[in-house]
Amino acid sequence: MSVTSKVVLGVSVVLTLSTVAAVHLKQAWDRERLHQGVVRDLERLERKKENLRLLEEQRVLTRHLEEERRRSAERLRPQDT
Image (cartoon, rainbow, N blue to C red; front, side):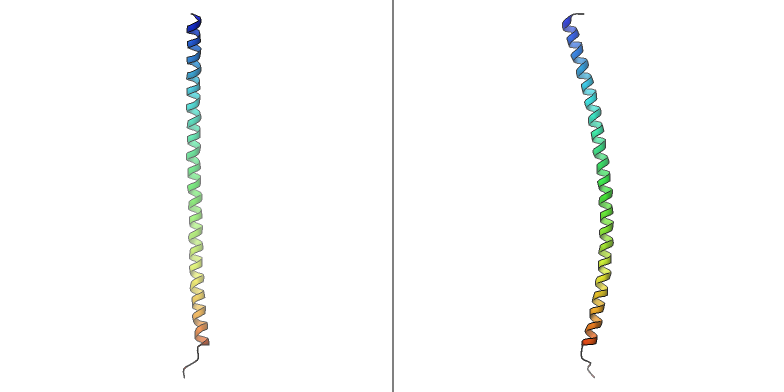
C-alpha cells in the first residue's frame, strides 16, 4: 500500500469517526433541549394553576368587600321613616 493511499485511508477514517461523533453529540443535545421544553411546559402549567387559584381567591375577596361596602352604606344611609 502506497503512502498516498494510507494517508487517504487515515483521513477518511478520521472524518468518518468525526462525523459519527458529531451526530451522536447533536442527538444528545437535541434530546436535552426536548427534555428542557417539557420541564418548561410543566412549570408553566403550575404557574397557570397558581394564577387561576389566586384569581379565584381575589374574586371571592372582591365579592366579600363589595358585600361589606353595601352593608356599610346601608347602615350609614339615613333611614326614611
